[in-house]
Length: 253
Image (cartoon, one colour):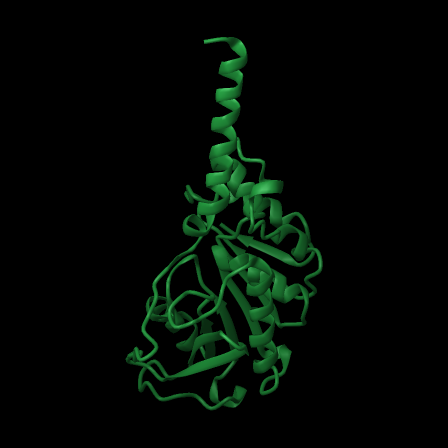
């Protein structure tokens, strides 16, 4: 086998791997649990199902969990005098659906916060084709529907793992009370380079999700939570994010 043949073979394999990476990244990044439209959510605490009709063929499903008294289970009135503190808009990770993520709402509802969780397109009951731009648009649409009933000063935007990038984008374009990022990534481009260093991400990656870029435009306090033994998204990514807006950020590791 000649040197030219070897070079062409290696080049062909390299191109094939990148083409494969382009087409399978959707399955790698997103691992949704799909639910039938007639599925009925059941929890032992007060909640309401929501639907946001973005456009024909695109409907975002969500759950509104109400702040409640942890002893009686009774829903709190939306008043500081009743112990109600505001609303958390929660963007979950890249797997499952709000059926499973809903259990985490009690971390907030028992402390006086309502919680809205939504499923991304193709997750749970939500419908529509996904692109990064569409996911950002959906988040903004939901936000605008919620601020009709509540002032932004009562809204906390929370993003966990995959959801942290979209939470940061949403906070950068609005004026919520606070942004909380749980195990965030500097960008999905950096995460991809960590695991697939051979991939030219600027050409192949369809979801770069530039958390670091959007964080520059956030105007509210930012809280970052990150485990010290996170093997998937290293703590270093949160430490680098914290340096972007140090006057607004507190990092808890």
